[in-house]
Image (cartoon, rainbow over all chains, first blue to last red; front, side, top):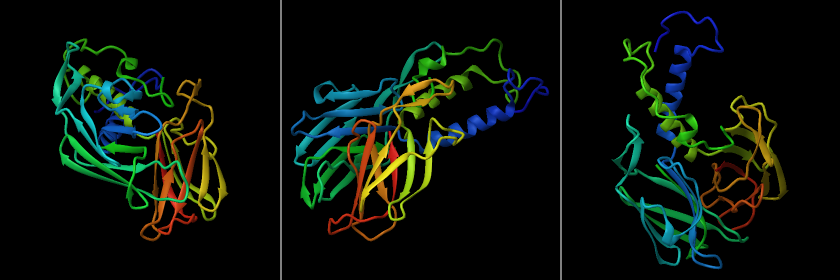
Length: 158
Length: 155
């Protein structure tokens, strides 16, 4: 952008420099920000659930959502075995509203994920391994001292 | 409504419309550009960490701190207590000021820690947040507590 005329009052006039910096920063943030960050709690003393979930396309922030009540764009969360989980997203989500305020379905796909295990006990190590099975599906494996283990974990998907 | 809150798209107002068709794209900001910006800001605002730290447990020393609600980096260093070798507690304040200077409650919800350098098998592990505290333990391959440098990202 460039200014149509010289800025007279910096407190009331939005300048080209401000717009360009904002666009630059937004563009960068959009590239490096995760599309979603989640904390999952496994079966155990507490019920398995999506303990926390932040999704870039969803205005709701989720806390303690039971597996049977997940947002519709999480197709499934399957506990395959101890420390072995499969997280599957829908291949479409409601995107940005158009000029008429209508949200259209847009393709949802991921390239990779990173995460870590939350351990509540001492003297042990937990390892988190995530595999992108297809653009909507992640398989997560957790071990604790090399043994498969149900552990809470945080995962960011990009 | 800004950080430490994560404003939804609706906090940025309605879908904008052009008062008149943009004539010169270099000088006329269009409604489509503004609406896209608002969507991206609210979306990225949901998933970006609220704070990121780089901490050297050996010295001990907080090497780097960035908090979304402190864009001018005016706040003091976070309270970090070294409880013992490889054992650290990061404590957030109960409130932080937003862009309007209002005190807004903040509670950390989840975090990730990543050991920097070290030997294969060294690992930094954050516990699920407890109140305002995040406990981080650092261990080597033999599972002994060790001091080291790690990055902590907090949501």
